[in-house]
Image (cartoon, rainbow, N blue to C red; front, side, top):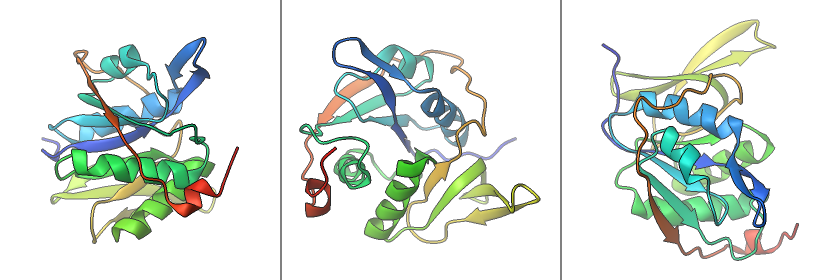
Length: 196
């Protein structure tokens, strides 16, 4: 039997679109939610970086709760803005087992920033995740895929950026009814210094 956590897993999700046409969950975020579900028997909690997340897609992915930080007009493309938004959401999730991001330009920066702020370990460009001995194990390719290595975080909550397309997206066996919770954010001077 595969080992899992029983604590929540927090996932930073991206959407494409706009306020007029609506927003759609990105494929990379759907791919990230698939391994998140496999890591825990507890809830998967999504942080949505836009005011109107795709609740139907998040439901199909089995998300239990959607936290929607108020970005107050700041761009979700700015890593400091996203890190502040995620930090504002953390107190609302009881003892998360891990925090997952998409490993893109912003996700790697958010992972590093949050790990430093939370005094936690981090890994980026991860291709697979598993739970072994009660710890999150991450597999990474190195040197253009010529070999792989396994890493685990030994301090704090693991903050992990997973490579897009490293996992195929599959809907949950049963759709969920995700609750939406709006979250106020206090932005750092770093987040306020950048405009896009």
